[in-house]
Image (cartoon, rainbow, N blue to C red; front, side, top):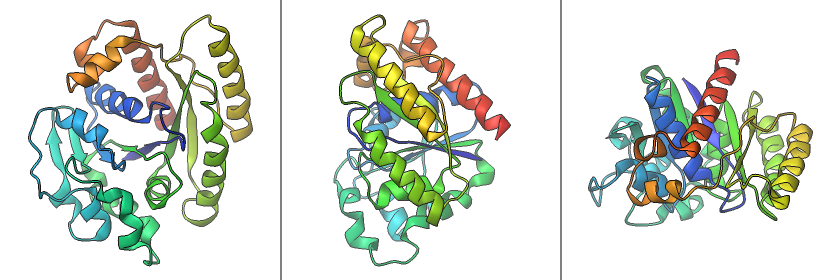
Amino acid sequence: MYTIAVVNQKGGAGKTTTSIQLVAGLASKGHKVIACDMDAQANLTGTLMGETEQEKFAPTMYELLTGEATVQEVVVHCARGDLIPASRYNKRLSIIDAAIGDQPNKLYHLREALAAVAGDYDFAIIDTPPARDTLAYNALTAADGIVIPAEAAEYSLDGIADLAESIDMTRKYTNPDLRIIGVVMTQHRAQTRVAKGMTKSAREIAEALGTTVFRKPIREAVAIVESQASYTDIFDYAPESGVAKDYMALVDDVLNFAKEA
């Protein structure tokens, strides 16, 4: 199983949207995928579960990380694959440090959980919170590679500098083999001055990180918003749209990287 964390420590960069499309795109190509929602907002969970009712007291990512439930007890089966959900009823993930902060192995909980089911899946996709916390470091420790979404807008690249430090710390202490798959530009408005400037800056940052910007940016499209409002992914909602083709190009690039890893 190849594990990918979708990471940017700045909010609004498109992490959850990118995670959703990676899960759906990989599944559409016949791969077995498990999605992991490590964001207390539970937006990945909401989209992948759709209108399926989540049991109010069912175990979630929180119980998995605290050791109150096994990965087998937490996994939910969805249309595009399996899911370790966050709770749609509470935000306990946001206070996970209070529960496991004193545990010496607290950064390894997700990696150990995924190792238990690695033989059942081809890919794991982890949606992360916009923070430098125990959840984010669990994701980085569990990952083989990371995808960094960055919105093509002013100040959107600010979080990547902090992320670079987190990557260095992770490589030093918990996951020396962590690789950066690439930076993907989201909400891209072709031919605008801001988009061109941000793409140039992103390439410079990617080079400094030892990686690259994915060949195809993700265009700004109302279909993305509409698909999420309909609790589905872009490949199901508007499969022939330009933005669906953008995301499928990202899926193909990620697949090629994973094959060569």
